[in-house]
Amino acid sequence: MLKSLKIENFRGFETLELNQFGRINLLVGENNCGKTSILEAIQLLCSRGNLEPLSQLMFGRGEVLINDERKLSPLYRREMLDVCHLFYGHGLTLDNKFTISSGNDRIECLIDIHESQEIGQGNLLGNDDDNFQDLSQNLAMSFNWISSQDTEKIRLLLSPEGGVLSDYSRRNRRELRNPAIKTQFITSSSLTSDEMIELFDQIVLKPEEEIITKALQTIDPEIERIASVAVSRVRYPGRSGFKIRRSGTTQPVPIGSMGDGIWRMLGLSLAAACTKDGVLLVDEIDTGLHYSAMSKMWKMIWETAKQSNVQVFATTHSRDCWESLAEIAKMDDAEEEGITIHRVEKGRDRTTLFDTPMIVAAAEREIEVR
Image (cartoon, rainbow, N blue to C red):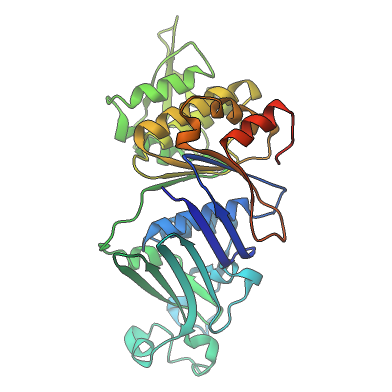
């Protein structure tokens, strides 16, 4: 498990340190203080060369360049990722670098100059353009994952505007010497239908399927069974792809006919059950859940995380959410496994840590931790 994290020059953080992580770690703080960026930093550190999750997150943030100017090489008349937003201050200058580290593991991302042989290969930089000698067309972005065992390296060519091809993850896919740590990132808008079906197929007719049913029963005790609909039949966005059988009726109910809480709990339970020996990242974990369901949600995540050796990082703005986590912190094994709350504050280089006993005390004394 990760025990600490240090971020330098990444997104909104010039520098930030977080220490004493446990099994479950909740990030709190004001809007736009960087909680989601911390989740992204953890996923990037764990990825070890698989940059596809980062690409998906950047698309979700709208960090995309679309340029069809005729003067550009055909390679660049496509959708590209606007990578300057990964750097503190949104700067894309020579030798700009961000670093994310935890213990002996570290990732460094550096803006540097292309080697001449790279420029000439496959016309990647559009070397037939009139302004080919412009420095901005000679920049690259180099990723280095460094651990005590080995180093993984990826070098990506940048367009004249500082973009990276949106399909770079597929172009750079290869077998890693040290496999990535399994991660699952659930955004505030939850997983898509296709993502949930893919996760469900991993646990259907296995003991883990019972975790899903019990989790949904915390919202609706009448639920008896859930089944996925074939992917080819999922034609519409939104809450689709599953049907639910409730007691007292033989007519299956489309999951879209039920509330947001059912959809959110399905995504949380699927992700927790399918991230064995990995890291679960959840943005705004309380989304769609009534305060009365919070304690049951945390209990499901706590038990699943221990059983499957999952480390959980989540964010919230909700008082009900952290106080419900305090109920879990009272359990006998909570202090040994570790439950923490980290308050992120703008302008501070360290988070304010609340360890397991402090969380319990804060809830009992009605002390605000957010």
